[in-house]
Image 1 (cartoon, rainbow, N blue to C red):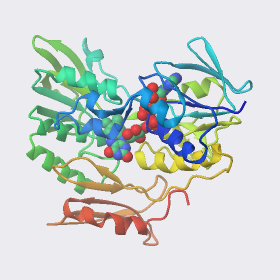
Image 2 (image 1 turned 60 degrees about the horizontal axis):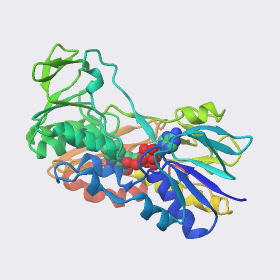
Image 3 (image 1 turned 45 degrees about the horizontal axis):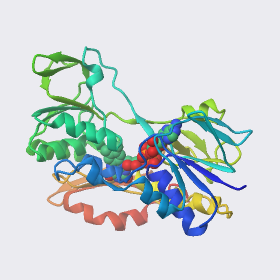
Image 4 (image 1 turned 135 degrees about the vertical axis):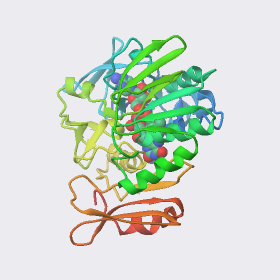
Amino acid sequence: MHSIVIIGTGLAGYTTARELRKLDKDTPLTLVSADDGRFYSKPMLSNAFAQGKTAEQLATQDVAQMQAQLNATILAHTRVNSIDTARHTVTCDGKTLPYSKLVLALGADPIRAPLAGDAADQVLTVNDLADYARLRKALEGAKRIVIIGAGLIGCEFANDLCTAGFSVHVVDPNPAPLNRLLPEAAGAQLRAALGRTGAEWHANTKAVSVNRAHNGYLVTLADGAALEADVVLSAIGLKPRVLLAQQAGIKINRGIVTDRYLQTSAPDVYALGDCAEVEGLVLPFVMPIMHAARALARTLAGTPAPVVYPAMPVVVKTPAYPIVVSPPPAGISGAWQVTEGEEGVRALFYDAQQHLHGFALTGKSTSEKAALTQQIPPLLG
Ligand SMILES: Cc1cc2nc3c(=O)[nH]c(=O)nc-3n(C[C@H](O)[C@H](O)[C@H](O)COP(=O)(O)OP(=O)(O)OC[C@H]3O[C@@H](n4cnc5c(N)ncnc54)[C@H](O)[C@@H]3O)c2cc1C
């Protein structure tokens, strides 16, 4: 019998299921999830604390509600251990589940900083609801926070936790935050704005060890500084979860490799979301998932549809200094043209032919987002 299995109940898994049900109400659908299967919006994890939101409040639907909404079976707290692409089965906790089409929506793992010290294992990361609940618990009674990494997630947490009244130190090896997304002028403004909310910066250096101290932890930096902390949060990036696919003989690179149809190297196996590398692009953001899920749903429902990615700017959730950025695609050579004024920073990335390929806007300049997005060629047209 025709049956679709989706591994993962994050935004990628659930959005694919929702989109599929708009086109096909009846094909048996099973979602398998290592976590508890509650639906939540992951981007809220990095700006929920100052609003006083608990993990329970962020979870908007439980498994029973999702099963009813999707007319699906959801196996929560169930980890898929292997995929047999020849037999078209997956095994989880000793059970074998057949599929006619399989979707890998496995997400990504936080990268662990290589830290020495007897409390290196106490460093927290936040990549799902359970992590967020752990962070909230750790923050009870805490005052001093060290955040390792000034990327998107590190900066958002820095803003949120400063707003909530914590003393926040941010450590990053680059001179300015959001180094991979922003030209340095915009990063420097963000750094100054977060500084005004109370964040202390330790730029051009790394955390090398975390040790227990008599009253919390001591974080030692490569430049010799030592920071006392009650909570240490690491946000240095994510790596796509590829192991399950790799062990099944499915082609991987940085992520699980797919073509424009989200099809992996194995017949009837598809991938999307943070685990996937679609035509060479690893894009761990919400908008690419929405576009991919809509295309994949059509394919699963019997009308193969390639994914189309327009330019997809990312709004950085740092209310102290609003930023929207559409980073230039890797491999496009060009240069930023930066203007700074009262409206904020306006940085436009042009190639040699003066074609716009990216932008970073801050402050009031963020109002130009829609107009500039239209000028950027699609990432996958
Ligand atoms: C703090 C934070 C803030 C963010 N803010 C933004 C933002 O403002 N804008 C934006 O665009 N993006 C943002 N992102 C990124 C965005 O949230 C992610 O790209 C998106 O949520 C990823 O969804 P996913 O379904 O691919 O992965 P996940 O949500 O990680 O889901 C993976 C699922 O796979 C399951 N799973 C994994 N392995 C197995 C297995 N072997 N067996 C069974 N189940 C398995 C997991 O249990 C989980 O259910 C943010 C991310 C974080 C962490």
